Amino acid sequence: MAENGNGSVLVTHEGGCHCGKVQWQIQAPAHLQTHTCNCSICNINHYQHLIVPKQRFQLLSDPDTLSEYRFGSGLAKHYFCKACGVKSFYRPRSNPDGVSVHARCLNPASVLSITDTPFDGQNWEKNAASLAHLSKA
Image (cartoon, rainbow, N blue to C red; front, side, top):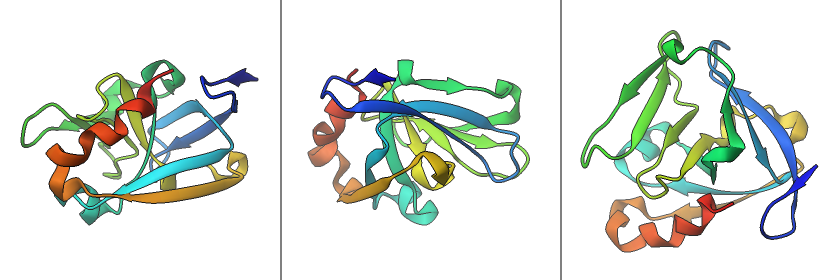
């Protein structure tokens, strides 16, 4: 088992889309700290962010199973399963050195608890810096 910079033990979590064509795994603590955002895209999908450094994310499925969507600034890369349409992860604008996985797409067997904090994405420019530390190793 690895540790993150805070001394927390990291476990392997698996997740993916609804139909199973998109599969990935991450290294993160068993007790998760997530954020639910109220921006236009996250609110409509009820996306529960778990941001990890990109080196702790591994896509297990073929990248050709994904469709990419960008809007606004075009910096965030939203990935959707081409078959079922679920966005189970993306590259966030707030953390270009990380990956945000949708905590609701995790296999719950490896999760001991989730503490969720609201994030005001409607005022993204004002609040984005509060997430920057989440993608640091």
